[in-house]
Image (tube, rainbow, N blue to C red):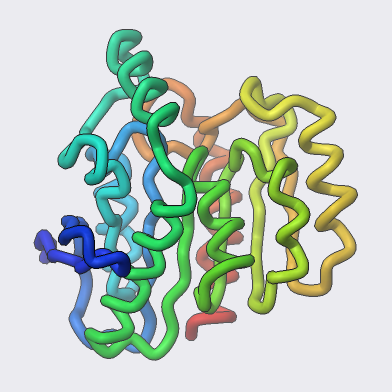
Length: 229
């Protein structure tokens, strides 16, 4: 059963909503980190999927400081442009703080361990959760801009998995190479490459590549079962 929960921002600037599902007090929780399209039906379906596996899962509305309740469709060109506009205004540091607040909220509900999984913008944020927060396990899908944040890799204290789209139109080959060079030898980092374009694992939409999405998601599920179980 799903619900909307309210989370207090760590900077005391207000409260923001999160779509949540799964048993309150579950042993483990998962924060699903949105793309630039908000907490839309695809993101909510991912929350529901983790809940069906017994996790307490939640997707915080990370655009709440700009425009609460954003739900956009990547396959509609006008909405894609709106999403890019929101992305340009998004404060990454505050976004990480809001994810940290969401992690704390699930811990307060009783979760002993909490992991994060993010997509696109959320993929970058998942990486930064591994470097800046106490997330017990972090997974990023085709994160944009990780190469510019490799200087933070010394902060990775818990397991991190990154799914990289080798044909990603938003992450050029040199950026992918930098990620491999910077993180490939890290004892806590696992990298997987897929011969696909950006957003191949999006739950809903034309970019999804079913076989590769299922492969990546099976690896994520096993990763969380190992580190959050």
